[in-house]
Amino acid sequence: MSKRFWRRFLRVLGVIILLFGLLFAYLAWVSKIDAPAVKDLSALDLRRTEADTGLYTISNNWFRKSNSGLYEMYVEGAPFERGTINGKLSEELVKKQEDYFSEQINKMIPSKFYLHFLKYFIGWFNRDLPNHVTDEYKQEIYGVSQSASDGYKYIGTKYSRILNYHSAHDIGHALQNMMLVGCTSFGTWGNASADSTMIIGRNFDFWVGDNFAKNKIIEFVNPTEGYKFMSVTWGGFIGVVSGMNEKGVTVTINAAKSSIPSGSATPVSLVAREIVQYAKNIAEAIAIAKKRKMFVSESFLVGSAADNKAVIIEKTPDSLAIYDPDKNEILCTNHFQSSTFWNSEPNVEQRENSASVYRYKRLTQLLQQNGKNTVEKTIDILRDYKGLNNANIGLGNEKAVNQFIAHHAIVFEPQKLRVWVSTAPWQMGQFVCYDLTKVFALKGMKENREIYEADLNVAADPFIDTKDFKQFKQFRKDKQRIADGGNVVPDSIVAQNPNYYNSYVLAGDYLFKKKEYKKALSYYQKSLTMEIATISEKSSILEQIEKCKHQ
Image (cartoon, rainbow, N blue to C red; front, side, top):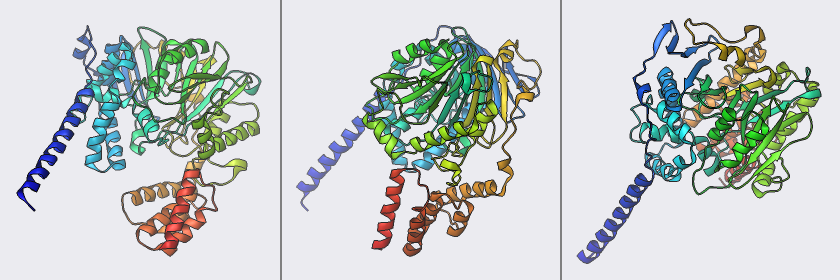
């Protein structure tokens, strides 16, 4: 080839490199997030002390690990102050949580190039995020971020990372519709509850690797403005996914089908946080939800002791509707129920293609079978792993109320200000009861002691001691081994969970990669006789069957 060709080629290559360089420079510039202005930085000088073995304190604030396995934390004060104290008290967990999150992202996206691109893309996508977060929460997040790890500077500053993590749920849900969340929630009151008081239960089926759910924190917050509240959270996270305040207002969130957005807005968890901190009834909760713009669709199940009822606030990036069943019970999975959104294209797609409607029907069936509801019956429902009519659909099926992926399960009694939180494994361990009136009456803590109501705790499900459960735990290990490229015995993975369609799919995929197409075909065909969770999964199985036949 001529020198002229090579000169032209190098010029074109140089232009391309320059354009890419300018693109990344632009993305880095627009993704830069400045820290909020804080007038009083004196909280940075505070130091935690070990007041008693295993009990860490800063003034009235305290942090400890319960013998239940749950961490407990109380924080008070102004936004930056309580955020800084939160971070200092739970510093090890803040760092671990980022480690776990990054570890799972690296498993999901092993390519360094794509990870690098993802960093800038999320930065660009979230370029306006600070404009949609209140100054109060920016200052609180900034305070927490002071205790974040120094090991992730290549991703961004401590503050920008912790702020962005608050929208991780929304980004994954909206951009890829990954549906890492398949939550179930419900409530009863009046003649639907045994003692007529309100009972609300929910499974938070948010899975970002098993490690992510290891270190749950039950946080009790006494802010300078708004109401005292509790929530189930994790290190570095000030948003609310399940919470109740001192006025008996509860908030839980359920993801709904979303269209792909063009940019960020207020993270769902911060809208829920604002409701639980500032609303004393349903009307005030609705008012808060109305004034915040979100970039994903979500259902907020809001219970209120003052109203003695619960409603679902259904919110999309463009509008809002209220679902009130006008009876003494309410159910929520992952599709909208109001007349406003029932026939919307995303909601129709969600109902037809996901496991949401099946799970809703199973939830309805369980409530009808159980008679008047109690806390214990609510927990039994949250633990249910069967299909319609008690069918054995395999352990871990997305169509079950209990999918064995829950970060936590929780039960509220708003009028009594009592809350029960699950302990490992998933929602099958003991449910620990807290009385908010008693917890917030504590004037600091000087000796390490349990604060739960031992006589109200609900025992672990005996299923965890069975052979079936032990086999299921081995099934999950083998499933991960396949994902990591390891070797398994296909018949063994099927035998560990024989009524679950995915067992046969896993065996089929494993054999397909080894080019044993005839054996793979038999497993795929067997999976079609099982209860498959979604239409898309069934389509994928049929595609694999065709590939096997062509081979």
